[in-house]
Image (cartoon, rainbow, N blue to C red):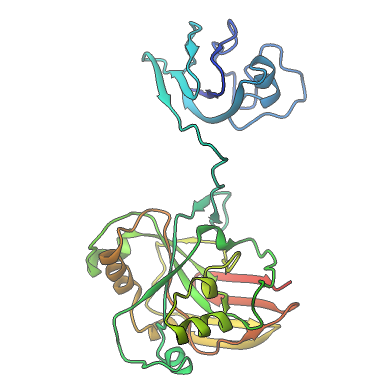
Length: 324
């Protein structure tokens, strides 16, 4: 069965032009407009935006998805904000969509290695002081205290080896190399034995930190948000699927301008990946799209504009960015 566009109409009611939306697709590469100009680029729905705008002047906003079946051949009047479609074997289906007062934020995503697929990011949780040597260098007790967490906004992600701008309001930007866990199945109060079944995949990540702001927050007992959760503070490499990777061991390393600054092994995590997932799921219900940055080993240090950061986790891949 060939895909058919589903139109979303906004602002005014609009009638479907006769015989315009009734045509089935010949293929996903052909616009279903009978008078579609040759050579015009198509949208992912199989219908080109210029044709749709021509039919719905001032009314058509976007084609949001494709669905198997055919658009209703009768020409009903669609209420504003309604998705209207009909499957080959069913009646007209209508579903209201939100009428946002501002444009919703774009989804951040991490590429999947070797494919054109993307992993949408919902939230980013970070585990604090999860390597004993790092806890010591930060002036903390390295004993196995309960894990604690801070967060970064979902749009802090930087992918594809893109440059990272040196952030404002700091004179001490530090790198922290980490293994990142991508949650594919949600849950709460997850058992340690079941934790890895909730993982979609893994990637390398950098928890970039405005250390001076974080240190000041520590002294005053204030939250770390502005030290950790600033814009573009989470460069990440491509994701790999979880199957075949063992997060309990493997080299983790970061080089700055070709010189090793951080090196350790995942076996030295104070709280293992399954333990972190289980513990965090007791505090919040994990959801598909959540990322967990599992902590950094010793060797964190300041970087400046022009520095090139290259990190690896054995069996996962790499992360790379330049500070500009």
